[in-house]
Length: 362
Image (cartoon, rainbow, N blue to C red; front, side):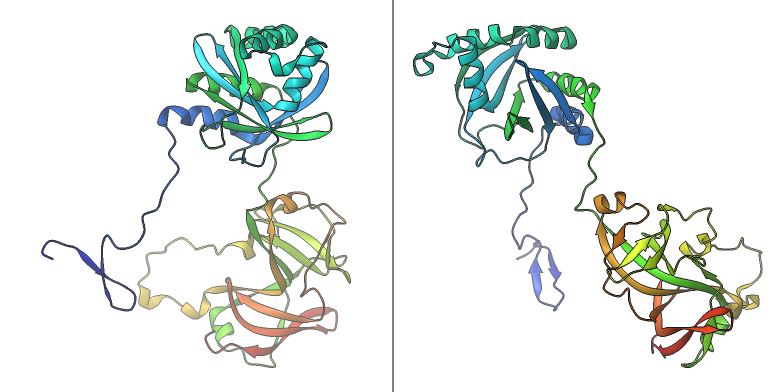
């Protein structure tokens, strides 16, 4: 069709620009962005005494309400701003019965339930009003709407030995931001580290500095002396994302840390982590000695990926399981690229790596 743009697929088949399925993204109102960021920032718990019992409230993004405990819908006003709070029905009914032990919950009108709850939680509400600078008025307590009809700020509540899911929705994003700031002032503990973020971890035996010319001349059977090892008390280094490192020794179960993880920058191993480029001298490219370009050879015993949360918990004495943490075979890595395979050998008082194989593309 005239005017219809086309593009080529990887196999050369013409494909219309509007082919394929559209991607649906979740819509977040621009006015709510600040409230979301404040409410969920750092994800720490808030310890609160409510009606004489200890509760832990933790903002948690995207919790499903479909499988949650049965909830009650508490509608209220913060100043003139309308809001709704989904709370576990078990908690709400416990508070109502404590407020009036002879009350018949099945006959309690939503407005009367609101008055009873507001009276029972008066001390807590007064504290919140002073902190937020707004009057809080509970208007009604009723059945929760079906999941999906609201777009709430979700959180967990740990109380009476159980973990519940709750949700909060404000008509005005500024009210949610105010509450988020209040929560932030009273949060305790350390922020959780995301376990879905994986970082590369390498177990290295040692390293050597050679020139590009020397590397080009290497042949199977040659031995490269190791310039740097982790030290007499260690048999290698644990290197995390080319940024952190710690000396380790090998055990039957894996590698054991001999010291805390430290920054590679400023350490004796900094030269391995990143290639440093010498300042330009103004010489013509024809005059450059490419064979003299320095190359960092790293002898790697094994590698894996680990969640950020697990890495943050590593301490001296911790054992990291590593399938390749046995034997004397090593991968030979040149400036981040695997160029061959070798084995650890001892030469007098020194240590070295005998090259067993050099890859064709090296």
